Amino acid sequence: MNQLDIEGAAGLSVRGARQVPGATQAYDKLVSDGVAAKLLDKDPTLWGPAAEAESKIRLGWVDTHRRSRELVPRLAELRKELTARGLDHVVLAGMGGSSLAPEVITATLGVALTILDTTDPHQIRRALGDRLSRTVVVVASKSGSTVETDSHRRAYLTAFEDAGLDNIGGRFVVITDPGSPFEGTAREMGAHVVLADPEVGGRYSALTAFGLVPSALAGVNIAELLDQAEEFYASLGGDTGNPALALGAALGAAALSGRDKVALISDGTGITGLGDWAEQLIAESTGKDGRGILPVVVETPTSPGAIGSDVLTVTYGGSLGPDAVPGGGVTPHLAVNGPLGAQFLAWEFATAIAGRVIGINPFDQPNVAESKENTNRILENGLPSSQPSFTEGAIEVYTSGSATTVFDAVHELVTAAEPGGYVAVMAYLDRIGDAAAADVRPAIAAQTGRSVTFGWGPRFLHSTGQYHKGGPQEGAFLQITGVVTDDLPVPGRPFTFGELIAAQAGGDRQALSGRHRPLLHLHLTDRSAGIAQLVKALQKG
Image 1: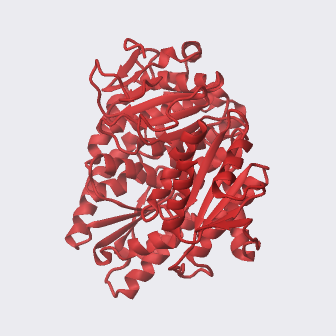
Image 2: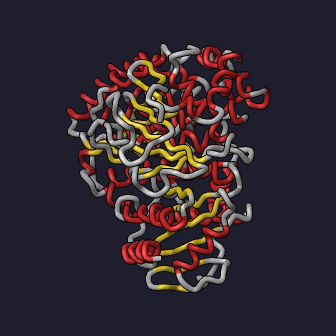
Image 3: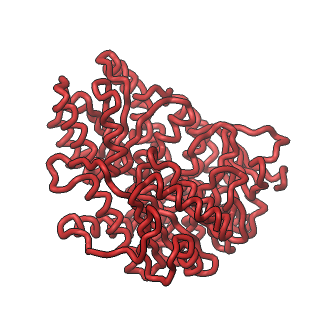
């Protein structure tokens, strides 16, 4: 990386952007078209006539941090009120953009926050059994119709009632859009209601109530994040000294020149988990119309998948000395370093810019509903019956191929992906109790040299799920499900959490099969043993 190639503002720097093939030309074209200033003015025409109507109601994120200022004293007072009642254990029920930003904020700043972004009954039972009498539940949903968060709300409501706790409604804080059906439900419950910015989509909502309410209640000084964003905001309209514009030009130009995978790697300098948040932002914003940028979250700078001929390697962090080589183990194409509040705004701006460069609407998600609709049909009619192709140890294998071992079945899947394609590992498991399943990603990447993503189901359906269906149809998909040994009913619904997660996995299989994508389903009859068996087979292979 050319260390002189640095764009910086307000403590945030982007290094290497000018060295990406085509990025200088893309940047110059953006400047000649006045795109930065137009975006700062929320011009909905920037992505073409077809995107104009959606863009017109989705550009509030550009300056939402200013409107979020009014939340600071209100949330400080609410936290004081809740802690006075002994409610100091904050649980966030949210999916996609509603949970990923608070997770980054609290993890980076060392503040405890329990996050429920799953329908796995084991993970939910564990949360319900943790300090229930001291728990305040933040339920985050723009509409309130999200099945996962509605189910979490119902489970906690029943748990509070069964425990005989007082003022149950006051143990909930609901974040939703003004006028949504959920607002009425929340007020009927007697919950604390915080209305979000209605002109900001979920994945761009880090600096709205969705990102800030759970973080503040958990103990984060959110005013500092807003200060960082405000300071960085001053750079966004400029044609020079605009690192977000440089980042967006580089992301878009790289995708057009063949580096359409972006490896996102923490450089270890102070920001935790930003890759997962940026993954959902980039994948859901760009993966449509057969085009897109595939983000690949890589565990460390030395993990498999950090580099490749079709990969743009990007490291991120909070701070970095001027003479240091970003990444520690890999020399990235781009390094993005700076305070967290500025990082959120920079990546949002850059993603919108990249959408213009590659020619898509970065604000819609036309394929997200498909798996949801399939899930609802399965919940009504049941899963189609099927028998495993074979069983090996603790793993049932469902494949259309001729493999007779788990390793061979995975090998068949990977080789079925197109040249330049990717492998997506989708684990419908307990991401705490079954955390070792994440080792499958680097194991496959090391064996194959391909880009391999990893997502916890059903949370990835609200992010990379859009890319899987709407992006380039070149992926191969490994779905992992597990036996449910301690199911949990969803109060007021004719299904359990175990049935719901099975339906979500089945619905996603149907969506992918309908596109004739290579698909391998592994079902673990013993989760711990099955994960260990799978990882061992892949690493040994």
